[in-house]
Length: 277
Image (cartoon, rainbow, N blue to C red; front, side, top):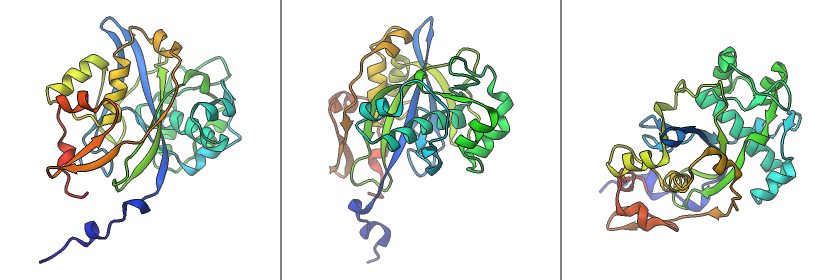
């Protein structure tokens, strides 16, 4: 009998946990608060085919302490995310960088009180950032831009459960979509992008037309409680780390977390049939 050595020799405890940042861009509409969503390319190593918010792993260059910064200082972010200041700085830089790379929205401006109006002029730099041929700090310095940390709000913290082959300690941020800037789908990581209210996307999920992992489902469920972007931005959120537990039930992967009953009651969970775990 043959054995898959890659599966049998897998040591879950040896998988490193990488920092990551995810940004929920929101805007007001006649239907309520809309959030920007991406459907990731099928076959990607992490969350392939899933519907997610823009975001990704922290890059070593995100620790750049020379970046000009407007808004709450690093100590404030470190306290909100229960981490050290160096990590907090990297998380905020990663949040702004990943949002720009993945959807073209840039939370930065020529001074602490303004934002760039048209990010299309930075299309070349955006491609270089995504290819890691340019650091975000160097890009901001070259263009004379100030990072607008004041436009971000801390929202949640989810850690990939033990047992996954890639693990992330992900901080979720929320930000109002800047007037005049357009969130697009010009990224290699998404097949489709869309603006929907949280309630609309949850209904889309319930009908089996998209796949949501527990962290995304939970954030959409939370956002659905708010009527306006102003309410979301003003919300006082205490960020508590969430570490779900992964197990096998009747040959299927099960993720245990607070609120899981609502998640498993309906919706599509094709990821539960994975054979690599």
